[in-house]
Image (cartoon, rainbow, N blue to C red; front, side, top):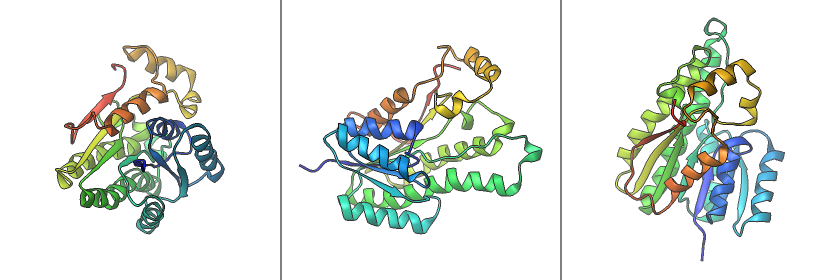
Length: 244
């Protein structure tokens, strides 16, 4: 019996890596995508194939570029013939004061975070719609909802845009493709561990549960949205912030 197939973008480390392992545990064949870090991607692929009874491939592609998205899709269709789940996780963030941020840097964040979600949802979603089956799960952020930081103004704007894309693609590909978004708050990633201690304490104090989320906790919710149990949730954004 063929396994279902999941694509995870921005998957070489952190949350994307955890999502790959969770979906592999759930029995999905995994497409591990990132635009940099081939050695890290290969390690994720190897770990999946060594620890789970599924297949995995790594596809290096900058999914904010249309030609690379189409090449990725060709590779996936050639290897697996279809896609059942798409997790749009790829994103970048670079904090700095507004007056220091150039227009090019602002636009680069929008391209990497928003255009990538648009292109992957457009082309993979079309395949899913034709197959009358599929799930698209967009990783947004509370930065696009109710947690605002002027030092990441472009990131905040991009995550609000991902929420808008979620609603529109849910309508576009109804009734066959369910499109939902998770909006995590602070996550205990390696990158966030490098934040100033004062900021970590200040933000932790605002969280009802008094801690950052673990990547596995967010990945578990992706697992639910990807599963057959989730059959009537569509066009929704679920805030996963421990209370804030």
